[in-house]
Amino acid sequence: MTSPAGWYPDPEQTGQQRWWTGVGWGGQRVPAAVPAPPAAAPAAVPAAAGATRTRRLGPLHIVLLSLVGALLLVSAVGGAFWAMLALVALVAVVIGVVALVRGRVSSLGIRNRGIAAAVIGAALCVFVVGGSANAAIHPVGSRPAALLSAPEGTSVAKPSATPSPTPTDVVTEVTEVVEIPFAVTEVQDPNIDVGQVVVTTTGVPGQQTNTYRVTTRAGAEIARELVAQLVSVQPVAQVTSVGTRQPAPPPPAPVAEPAGGGCDPNYEGQCVPVASDVDCAGGSGNGPAYTPGPVYVVGSDVYDLDRDGDGIACDT
Image 1 (cartoon, rainbow, N blue to C red):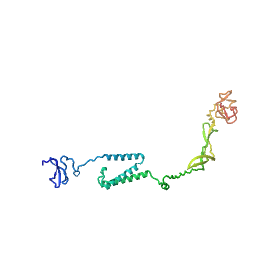
Image 2 (image 1 turned 120 degrees about the vertical axis):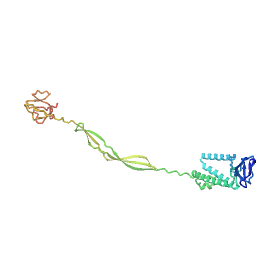
Image 3 (image 1 turned 135 degrees about the vertical axis):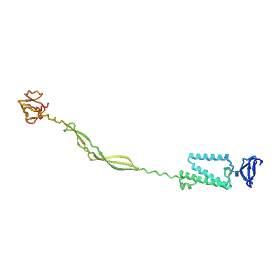
Image 4 (image 1 turned 30 degrees about the vertical axis):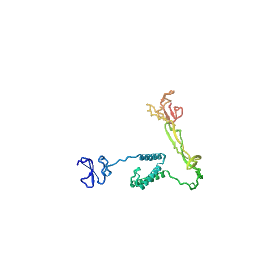
């Protein structure tokens, strides 16, 4: 076939037309009743042939969308977004009803009643959601009947606010038991050797009962005054004894008796020889016999060795 490009009867299917590219048959078919487009415009394929059209927004669409967006933005800033959204949805419901009655509103893209019904349903859903959200955020209180029935120009006295009651002060007495700490003292004890420290009396804390006058207001304490004190248990001071007694020197080791004589039994600690006179060794006595100290007098001080009478001779 040497015909120019165009629509021709389909040699394979009766009642159909098929596009001839000028070289071979294409895959596009249309019913034979549809008039073939001009051969010079093969790109304008009818919608039934599967070609798609791209619709662009017109100036009216752009203006309406811009207006709706601006209203929603301003209302969102002012805290009335949901109310404005419900209003826009109500306008969409009106437009959908008009399109449903007329069959179409081409300027707004509503081409049939099915689209109009879908617009009405969607707008109603948005209206219900927006109205519910607005009511939850901004509840409307009921107006008094006097305001509803008052004629125009008549001022209605508003009810005065009831002052909140002034909280009263409540005064009660409260008792508290507190512990009294015991004192700690030290005493010097001559009955204890030097260097020894002994707790002779253990300290015991006492108890004191305090009575307060407490003033509360609205459940909170605002003042407290001490009105009485009573010591129920007196504290016992702890006494620590510090020894001051000097211990007695240990007795000297016994000294072997000198050869040829004996030791006087009136003395112990050192051998005091039996002689006409005995003096302390290293002292001012002239003997003739001497004894080192210290010497303990256990009988009679026959040699007058214990000059200070403390029972210890030759101790200096």
